[in-house]
Length: 338
Image (cartoon, rainbow, N blue to C red; front, side, top):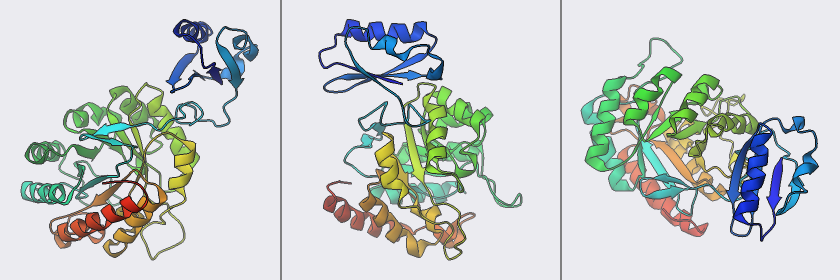
C-alpha cells in the first residue's frame, strides 16, 4: 500500500501517518519528492482491516495499492532514481561507471599491474575475486583472505574502490572489512541467508541476476537487502542460460530498459559473463550503454592467456583502454558521460 500525501502536507501530518502505520504493526518507508511525500506500508497490508482509515487523516491525498510483490525496489514506493556513491561518482546518475579487473586475484604482480592499467584507462572501481564459486571442485577457488589483502593493497596504490564477491553469510564481516562493494554472484542470488546478512551489513551490494532467474525474482532478491534499510543496492544483468551455445550466456538486453522502468535501483551490465568471449565484449558493452545501463563490470587481465579463471572473456589492458575511449563517445550520444 502507498499513501500519497498532499502537496501542502506538513511535517507533523506526515509524522502522524507514519506513527499510525507503526501502531498497526507495519514499517513505513518515506520517499520525499520535490512536490510531495509518498509513504509506503511495508508488510502484508492485506491484514489491515480498513485501508481507508488512512484517507481520513489530515494531509493524505489518496491511497494506492502496490501492483508488484516487491515494494521497496519498486518505483511506486520510490519514484526517483536512487543514487549510490562510488569513488566520487553517483551510480544511477548521468555518469556511466565502469568496474574493471580480473575474474580472480592470482598474485600480487597480477592484481597491481591490472589495477594500475584499468585506473589509467578510466575505470571507476576495481573488481577481483578472492573467493570463487566454480563449477568444478578442482578449479582454482581463489586466494581467500590473502586475496582480499592484495585487493586492499591495490586500492591503496590506485585509489580505486574494491568490488569483490562474498559467498556465504559467515564471510560477510570478513569481506566487508576489505571491500567497498559486496558482490552477490548469480549462483547466490536466491541465497536468502546471504541476502539478509548483506542487508544487515549496510554495505553497498552488487546483486547479479541468476542464470535462470526472471527479472521479478531478481527484484524480490533485492527486496531482501532493502528490507534491512540498506538502500545501496546495484542490480546486475549478466546474461541468462538458454539453448544457445555460441556464447557463454544470452545477454538479455531487454532487461536493462525494463528494470529501469520498474525499479529505482541502478542497473549494471556484465558483458564479460554475458558473452564469455572477449571478441564480443565490446559490442555487448556498447549495446548496454545505449540501452540505458548505469554502469558496466568488465573482466580485464594483464595476461589473459595465463589467467586461472575466465581468461577467454577477459580483455587485455590495451583492449579495455580502446573500449573505454569508444564508450565515452557513445555515452555522449545518449546524453550520458563517463
